[in-house]
Image (cartoon, rainbow over all chains, first blue to last red; front, side):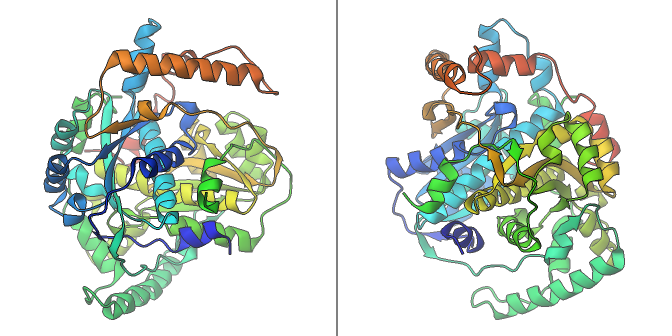
Length: 249
Length: 249
């Protein structure tokens, strides 16, 4: 197996980092890796805000649910959908692009562009012996996050990635069976087959949770995932993004 | 430089493939790589539809703007945001998750999950000597794509990736300057600085387009990107996704 596949397949989130900081060179290398990802229509509709200031980290951590690893890490990256640049350059060219960048399609473009770049950064970091953890918890309070990072109109923070030298590495979590995620030519809506796969997977996940050394517990994937979805979270999202000029139409 | 960084930094889209098909083993390897990516709250809210049927490929290609490489490739993958599984398993557990999965937050979760998985697949493919091209053009007609792939409610196709053995490799396109994409601690809204960076980048891109052997042309990045954004595209998107039960609130 190639080094690349090895790196990708060995991914485990790291939720405990030493306090050693990334060097400027490492940050540049990681951002170059992020920028090498494909981007929709070559629009490059995203930005990355690197956070090293402990006060800013503390604020972000509070919004995200006070996880220690948002503060204690080697560097914290925030990925944003971004049409601020485009707005500025269109204005230089006396073009009006406001309709386009306020569309739902623009939200998808920015979100996909930012995510592809982020995953490149994640893989690059892991290949350098660093650990990573995605922080979707920033979306608990995007108004707060936007204020902390001083983002202008047309910039939407989506998630963070904590990067650093691992103090403790988590176990690798087994994923859904191949057949549950991959469909051939047509989406397979066979519920009997899906339920059989989920039962098998529930046994795998149950064993994983019982056996893992830290934070051992008794649950299945279907129970755990269903519990996470029972009560809607971040219900302010639509109003927030619309008010900020995203997905207006 | 590590093999991983080398692979990531050498990415170039491939728009011309031989007709050699991927093996079942290669497809499994690529999907395993995709599944190894991080996923929001361990929800795994995405699916991949692999398309080998020439008739289905032809349909998708028509929706996407009749690009030849959507038909002629080694395999075509469609990435979807997906809460169909969750809906089914919640119903088994007699839980109602419909409010959550119809939220704008669920759209973001599914889009980010699908994109992280896709980028893992892209990097894995390139490490195996294959070429890739993202096909956002599927979003020209998501109703058509959804029908062709038979996707049920709570599954939203987002984009495709054509994968295969390269017949011709494109040039590597220079990206925005580091300073235009990366901000330290706070978003830098200095317009003078941004414009100086864009001017420099425009010169780089102009030289790239003039010098590249195929499809040489005379344009800058700011002109080209602004032109792409002048007329709103895919303006049906909000109505479509809302009608399909996404981002209702």
